[in-house]
Length: 193
Image (cartoon, rainbow, N blue to C red; front, top):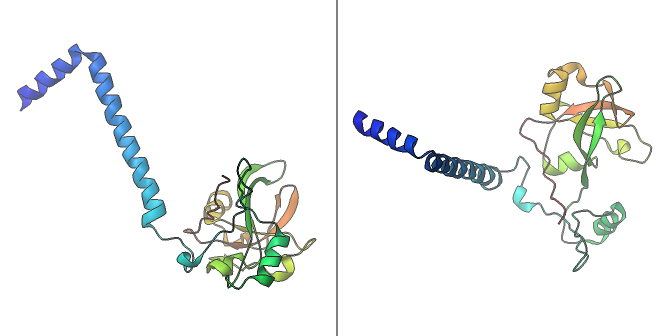
């Protein structure tokens, strides 16, 4: 077997172009397989960290051919849907964007999910630290509050339980931290089509 291995290595060394092609092909195959498995594992095999995920639906506005379709619904439309729909038991709103966390000395771009006060109870998600948002905070001009993802809480705040009640700047506006989300929670918002 050792003799066969030496023969194979000498043969490959004589043809470096073939060797590079073979290594590249194997690398691409392994990379593609790993990527495919990661996507299948995340989307198909692992359940969502939400209560009753099979009962969730996303309202989507389709504006016709040639127009951009959006997974976005205006809050006034949601108000109408809530009042008139007999199909949905409950509704909530979430929107994703990027913003700057921290002041002039320690700014950091973060992904942000702007949600209604009922969003986390709607999904059956309880904070691991702190509390849920309150209805009185979900009004124009209401108190500026935020929840941290478990990952951000661990990385930026050192998993300090004393972070609850602390004020931090988000988009230049001081926000009070009221809760920390579970480690397995990820806000999954659809991409625009």
